[in-house]
Image 1 (spheres, rainbow, N blue to C red):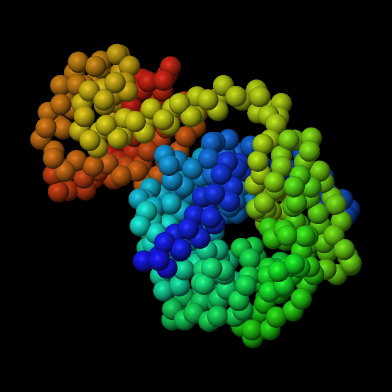
Image 2: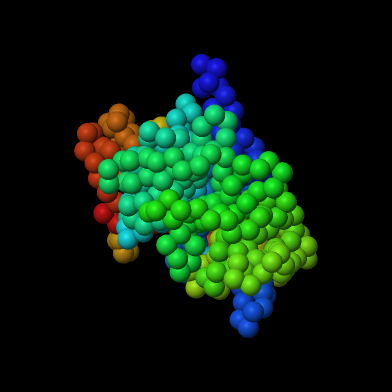
Length: 411
């Protein structure tokens, strides 16, 4: 029992309390002709609570762990459309989402409410999940290829570096006392990790997962461990409100390349660069509202209210609470079958219909497989249990002044 409590305390330190209110900031990045220029800052999470651990799914899509209703779920953010989709809805919290090579799936660490921690695989198509690794407690991970995983594993109050062959479920411990920052090194067959064997001076090292060969790359900035690799082989690290770079092939020390003071961003931690090297996502605290964000503040508020009222509606639906359910709709609510076939208009007919439905369906439950929020519209891909049978549908909710005004169903 004592070991279990200590583990829960350690996990809480890693995930819940290390960065209580963080956001993810996205920049355009220009490194042409050896320069380093940031522009067009945007707070893409813009949310109270822990929003962290960004990674790029592709050049135009970011994955991250985002706070929702007291837990963290996997968010897929589209840069082109400035829209967010939650790709999962489980009883636990998900962290460190990463694209699995050659699969339409994401891996993430799930921390359940009882303290159980396992690495799961989540389908990008429907959000369904399955356990990948459960015999070691993975804190952070990176894919070397589709079958080999490197991870920082929690044991004895610190973390050790492991490699795992997925096909045969074989785990190999490489070294002890490592950090959380693991990365595939561009244009190589190596990964990088942070060695903490020296308490006062941490090192960035490379590992060949096939041969097990380890080499020193350089030391970190003092007591900093979050980094990423640019496509050209340069390392980027943050400390306080400053960004530094180090190119192993030519540099002997870290170079300051950017200050985020003008953006009001402090305590820089996680960093991620798009595959084409033109976008930088980082985690920090604070952050001033840019001109473009200021002009979209009303839109952002509408998105938040739209999702909130639709979620409230869903919970009332699953509780079969007709009064709470109907309270989320306007008095002139209209229900349509796609594309524009009117099936119900007004609260009276809708209440009568759903009152009977709730009464006659004791096992009623809707599970949201995917959710997209665009402006005042919320699009839910739903899996609904009705009297022992499972149905799939899509509901398009349109919100006006804090209530649902129109719903279009696609069966």
